[in-house]
Image 1: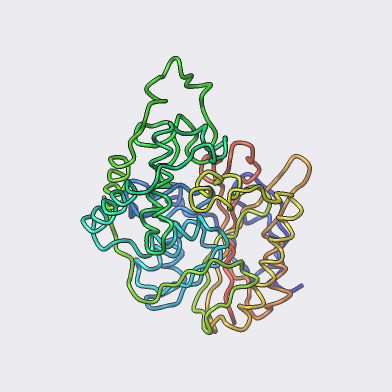
Image 2 (image 1 turned 90 degrees about the vertical axis):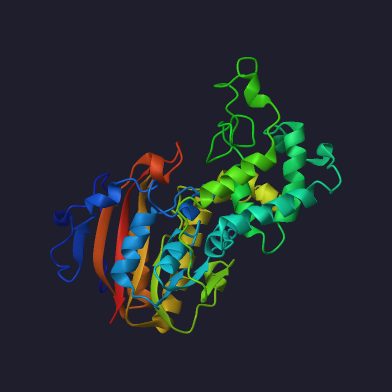
Length: 391
């Protein structure tokens, strides 16, 4: 199969020597060392609206955009997640078409790509929605699922239910994203009882109520939300206005633009992450129906990954411009009972369904547990940046 490379798993960046010499046209590189450096203290603070497991670092996204696109290009990201790649693309003068099946991803990405023009505008809008929320009827907390009630003081829960009802309105995505960003944590600036920041679970064993009564007191929404909004504008880089589009669609049903200059995307890890479970508390406030249990079977997720990549390659075969690049960031995984090699899946699908889009470069990067996985999903140790180009 032309262009196919078979990978062996390694917890270190993939040495060039592990790749067969017969693939002379494929350049194998280690990731730049500066990709390892933290960037949260220098990136646009819109990236920090709300947490999202598995997101790419903004400095890596920016580097890929600078390498493989030019200003004015249309950059497509069909697995946009928290919108890191689309935001970095718009800041750099690229047009963007982004998509993701997740409602949470849609809220965050839309908020990043179309925030209020200034901090003053954002605060004024927040004050208006907060004021209106106080006019709504007090919610009946008995109708709220018990697992939701466990996270909040009753008065806090009433406030956040009324506010979220208004934040769901179209056009309020920035307020909703800021609200979701302070929904749960143990720090004083957050709204819940002591809990994990990323995946919601109570930390009442580490912080028992009798020892930390202040952590179980009423937490006011207004001051925390306004402080969150102010932090979001600390390093504000206004996204480019104009051609920015987001679609909440699975890639199989996605209608891409007629001409794609470049695709840069990070598909969900094939087996490691369950975004519905990890974000269940935030999803409930976006829409209570979204927090219901879904099928998390590993085989189902692997099949969905393969189907999505197949559909994507078949679309790009026709729509990617000549000499245009496809960059896919793929996590390799080792599990107790199996080894998953999503890079093999991606490369084989391109070779089978889009032979005119050739694999040119592989950049291998090792990743720490704390950056890209949950505690119980430590199998993802290596990322492959697969660089394809249409001949």
